[in-house]
Length: 182
Image (cartoon, rainbow, N blue to C red; front, side):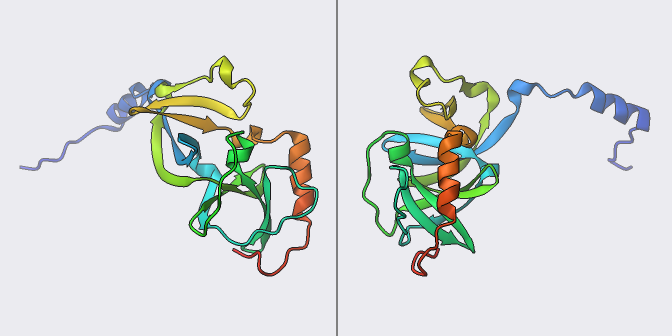
């Protein structure tokens, strides 16, 4: 006797129509990283890779939080010190300091972070809208109550103003020395 279940096409269609996913049960994946003693996350879709610190070319007239530029696989990328960008003070870089390479509006940007942690799936029902205390930090799209910790979710499209994006795009046209290669 066979253990296979036979399902007619009509039964199969009925089953799939009845299987509506509860939107609150869906989850999204985030690459998490540390800044100061807090955990932040960006969507997996926006993260390309993590590279170690390299020599960074510092062009004149760069924004305060732009550490400089590197050439990564043939593309010039601005490197942002995320501690400075998030107003958490500055940090000391070592050769072990990670740079999280992300895509923002179709262009490559490196983010200097303290530590890249892991990729986590966060159910949408544990993500809350940011409170009023985050109104100055327009890039925080939500706060995930995940395990015993909070994860501040960054909307990379809102990390920079349109003026700041234009200034960084202008920096990308800067000629880099060969030593600033990743």
